[in-house]
Length: 470
Image (tube, rainbow, N blue to C red; front, top):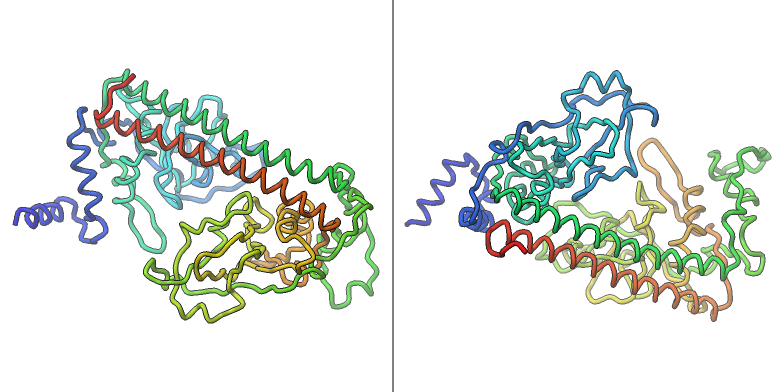
């Protein structure tokens, strides 16, 4: 009876009637926060301002304008400037109220919701889109502590509870303002911020070491194959005879690829062989409706989002589909398959190639993936390594077909890819070198992730008063 009363009370207080909002994990979190050794405040109570970016799509300009950040640029504890936009100074002045200052906390409200970081003081003046929330803390709270809390399980669970929508999810400003946060004394906040900063530094250093191991191995492979990319010219002016255009493609990139100058930096010691000549079995995957996914289904369904760097596949996070989709034999994932992302932004990216070492359960691939096997004369892992290198990615970028909707790579283009094909003994040697490098890199990646997770867990215990600060 008491539990029913509490549930009805919760419904009246929250004014939310969806079952997901009232899951036990959320009520358990609330109880845990209420037992914290430190006073509990809402974000509204400890901040000067909580607003989102401009709701109007501004006029973009080149890199001489004002930096304009979106949700994709916000990462846990840091701002990523790999893919940024710029707006004019006039547009910036129109939305000056949205401008973040150093020390403000930015939180994503669309896409991957609830990712938080602090604005560093080295960034030039910039502005934000509606997908980003700007939080300006009062002096009683350390910005880095607030960011650490929001990125912790204590903050993330609260954010997940407040998320609205089904197919397109989002979170409202008032939902962020009502989040609860324990406020320890300032010295403890500072120590928590330092713990996370030290952990992030260690994390980044281990990832850099991992990347360097992989880069060194790839350089060794290029040297072994006698390939020097610095000698490869980008052809800008050339003439194509009209009879070569008949029933063929008209785009410039396609014909740039076929110009021999593209291959000037390749070794003449080994022949460049079209990939199609060594493929024994290949096919596209299949597309399934999104509403059939369920953990209760028996068939693992691999999508491009499950492909990882170092030619890995994340089977743990893949979705499951009904048995009926396994009847499409062409989509079956097999041992020693090489798979290639063939559509959209994933083309020729860091996560566009994967190799299948073993299959533990019935698995099929998505229609935006091309799977193939090579004949037994060649090392399949070597072929995957070549696909994952600039040797073939450069070709893929030139052979991809772009239309008004999205770019893609078709089967004839995949078969036309040229790869250096040394004797099997050298293929095996290169495959072993890269397998060893990927193994070392993966170990460092896991070590870095574990180190960061341990720091997060310790911070959560300190916030809840379960562990003393040392």
